[in-house]
Length: 129
Image (tube, helix red, strand yellow):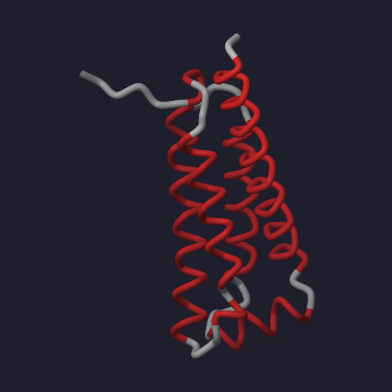
């Protein structure tokens, strides 16, 4: 394995580990629904039952991304996490929150994109053609 390949593999696992840890933590918090989380969801105008759906979806996405194989499911998981994160930014902006409430989400989107872009060939969906 060349140094470039090793570096890419390390970068993939670092970015993937960071984004999966963040989404795992976020998913667990959604499921536990502590008062801070329910207050945030209420302030954003969302029904509290959405926390259960988001929590389960995040945990399933993390499992799909980390599991070997399943390239099509991984694509859906990456897309789902992107829509979750982009929707969170939009929701905060729409609610009138300042950048202090959503700026860090851009870091998570960057990690998500990096993880997706750095995937080894065995974890990618091969285009038909």
